Each structure stands twice: as structure tokens, then as C-alpha cells.
Amino acid sequence: MSHNNIRESYKNGKDFEFNSLRTLKDLANQHNKNISWIVKHYEAQTAQQDVKKLEKLMDDRIRIMEDSVTKGIEDPKRSLGGLIGGEGNKMTQYIEQNTPLMGSLGGLALSRALAVSEVNASMGKIVASPTAGACGILPGVLLTVSEHKNLSRKQLIDGFFTASGIGMVVAEKATVAGAEGGCQAECGVGGAMAAGAAVELMGGSPEMVLNAVAISLKGVLGLVCDPVGGLVEVPCQKRNTMAVSQALASADMALADIKSVIPADEVIEAMYDIGKSLPPTLRETAEGGLAITPTGQKIKEKLD
Image (cartoon, rainbow, N blue to C red; front, side):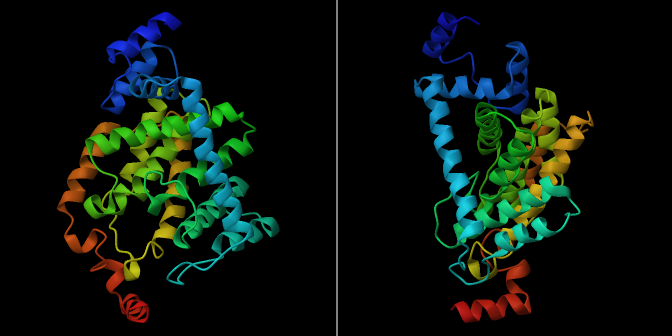
């Protein structure tokens, strides 16, 4: 498509619209582009902004993530509730002295997810992706994949646009709120966003991106939101790392051309239906699950 035609499409606001991952994939194939290209141009036509300006804005968000990784690892602080703090630093020391079972890439991704979650829980600056409770997943996966594969800054930025496009569809078709859909809607969706974006970073096709999303999200269907003491600390931080692990595994399977039998859009719809069927006690109220275990109740009493 020529630049003139692209400008014209901004006026009619139609050419890059998508409300499903299938439509997003079809648009990418139609234009012979990556999913990130479609997302960027959709955002450009919607916000009436230049693509380069949007790329700069995304780069700014990535720099905040990078800062939160550094802060969490090099200057760890106890969380507001005192339940977590220093885990990112511990994991970093471990991988410097040992070969992680997940390999160096996996180990580093875990340490970064732990670190960013700590920064969030200690009232530091993070980027909600898609929520503050799931903020460690995207930086854990995408920054690490980009670094290990020596990708360009532009490729990294594009990866985050792909992740945002996936998140946009989920937010439109379902929810990204733990209070509405449980942790499957927060860490689960964050993992799916990371899995799909990692596939694009590795040069996978739009279809592979969707398979990664579906495989990752399927693995956490039914995951409840049961924060101990009502704080975004336990089990939230460790669930970020589980989503990181699942995202990397799902991306590898998709890149191996392993397909999800259930399409990504249907998995998203199933996630939403499951979330609505969860009792309120398992949707961020701290009235069920781990929050009401004997240890969880003791912690709550101390916090009160």
C-alpha cells in the first residue's frame, strides 16, 4: 500500500480495524506484513498520529520497563506488605553462579519478572501490561529474548506493538481484570501477549503468533485471583514467573509449527466465560484460595 493510500485510509478509519485475532492475522497476511505493522497503523489512524511518534511513545514505555528491571535487581526493596522483596536479585545471583534448568534465557527472564513485580509491590514505577499485577511478564520475556537474540531496538518495539494488539483484542472481547475474570485474565493474558510477541521477535508468521497466544492462554484457564491479605504480592509475583515460563514454552511450540486445535479467539471467549463462572471469592476479593489458608489468614491478621 502506498503512503498516499495509507493516509487516505486514516480518513475513512476502516482499513486497519480489527476486533479479533483472526482479523488481525488476516490483515497482516493481506498486506504481507507482521502483526505489529497492522497494530501500529491502526493506532496511527485511530489517534491521528504519525507511526514514528507512536514508536517513540512505545520506546518510552519500554525504557520504563528497563528501569524497573534494573531497580528491582540492583536496589531491591521490601514490598508494601513486607511479603516479597529481593527475589529478583537472588535469581540473578543464582544464574550467575549456576546453569539454570531453564537455560540462561529462561533464568534471566524469571529474574526480570520477579524484579519488576517487586518494584510494583513497593510502589515503584512500572508499566501495566496488561495490568500492574502482571507487569513482570512482558519485560521478562521480550527484553530477554531481544537481548539474547541480538535484535534491534526497532524489532523490540515492534514486538511490544504485537503484544499490545493481542491485549487490545482480549480487552475488547473479554477482560483483563482479575476482579472480573480471575488471574487467568491478568497473568494469563500477560503470558499470552508475551508468547505471541516472542514469536514475532523470532520471525514467526502471524498464524504462529495466534497459535502461541492460544497455547499459552489455554494452559491457565480457570486460574483464580486470591491475593493474600488483598495485596498484589503473594501469589502474584510467582505467578508472573509461571506466565513467563509458559509464554516461552508456548512460543517455542508455535515456532515449531505446533498448532492449537482451538483457535485463539475461541480460547479468549472461553476464558471470559470461565471467569464469569468463578465465584466472587476467587476474583480478587481475598476471600478464597490461598488468601484463606491458615498462613494466609495469619498474614492478613498481621497486616490488619
